[in-house]
Length: 184
Image 1 (cartoon, rainbow, N blue to C red):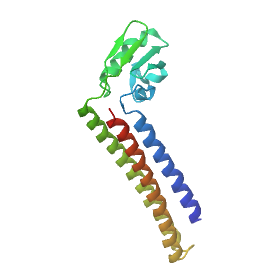
Image 2: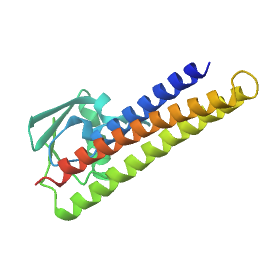
Image 3: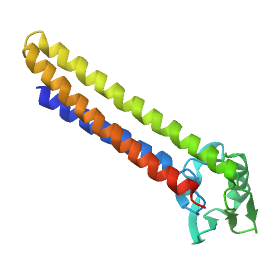
Image 4: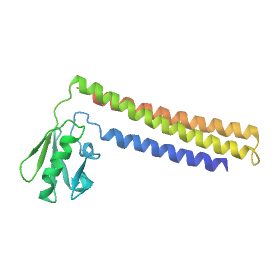
């Protein structure tokens, strides 16, 4: 039974790591990426709709994004949503396509993005620690009848090793993203 608890904890930690990676992809690192727009939603016929579901997003070069909406009436809604977002980009609307020129990051903006990276990393670590706590609580419940105290301690140590492994992975991902952001 404790093996199932550890397996469940590992799967949940993997998901927390996946969520961190998805969050970090949306941070702007000086290069154009369609994923930058994943969190941006536009008001489309009264409901918030992700921009990536409203049109085709392309990267013709490393500093430009183009958005070609499937419905041309959505152009102004997409433009407004991008302006309101925290991306710091100014859309250029030519009547059929929206162009986003990604300017090189300033030193100040790089520091801000590095700070955001740390925030996402801390959230992922908290999630991993919460999973550890849940797993340890389950193991302690089993200790009252199904397993011995020594076995319980051994399983808790295994869960801690798993936690340490995932926290180290988070640190590694964060270091790589910060290096990417700080690179000029």
